[in-house]
Length: 444
Image (cartoon, rainbow, N blue to C red; front, side, top):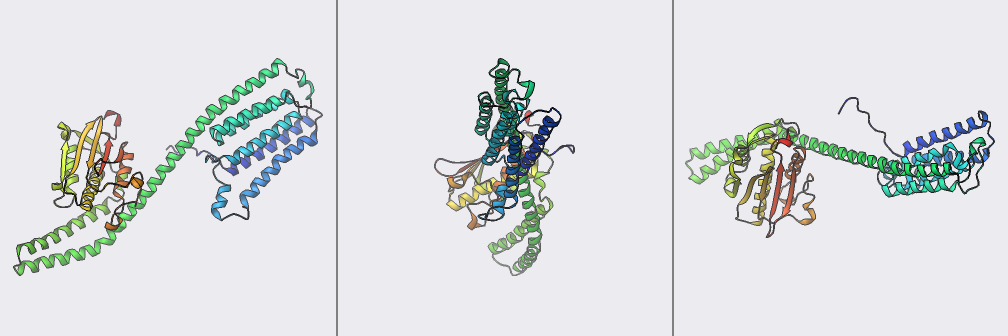
């Protein structure tokens, strides 16, 4: 964002209290001007009492904010009194704005009724309602102010000097009333729509900030795990090498030699994985996109899987799509594909399924990567939540629930989608859709 960007004000209870104090000051200033500059004779006690009503309710709101009631349950209850007034609850704001509209009506009745130039201030309440209330409540408040404006034609009003020359149901005053009704409708429609769009943008920014914080936490977790596991893994690797040499000297059976060699190989592989994690902790959010062929990407993802895993995967690439260049953060996308395949293989193992996992790559405007398995499937109660971090159906097997979370975040950042569906006959289908060029997605 630009350094010149200005943060919008928080529309909370303290903000509304400050606004009402300004309103009280404006009311008192207007009364002073009418009394000593215009020399009008008005029911001053009544007008001061109404201004005092606004000040008194403001004091009560401020006291309620700073001193929760005795039934308060602690900080959570206190937070309710200072919560954002645009959180769609709206009951407190609606009550305050309704009271203020009634107070304004009383003041207008005592200072000229529909002939008073201050009737324009009804628009202020409508605009605030459009900002702070649900659409239905905002329209209700606008209708109330139109009704209160119309009530000034029938209520007993105190005349305001020569400005009452066209008092009563004159065409001029009725025209002003109708003009106000139209203005109130336009204000609610446009200001309310703009306010809702801004709130939606705020919610989206909050969600992005939450995801970024979670990714930063995962990054720190990965770096710490790589550091903590490095020393014991090095010790295991050294012992495995010594064991392998000892086995070789004693001329053991071939199977035992193979097992010893496998231990050494797998320890070295684990150390390389930890080294990669430490080196690129958090890299997926900042890795530069590069051009890579789809075939090379799939091949690298398969190579990162455990030994013999590729024999259990059936890869289908449509036509010449394998030769198609793809512009994307390569290492992050390789990890996403490998995680989806690993999840499918583990699902097959848990269900003792001998079928092969399917990896289908095709192009339908965008790049579609589809992973299908015939495992136990995902329970419908958690299907929609599997993109959350640390949520897994394989906790007993040591699953952390991070693979799908990272995949969902990658898809979001790349302008794509990741969807999970239950398959007829059992199993799960993961559909990853991405633009072929995340830098210029419209060109894909």
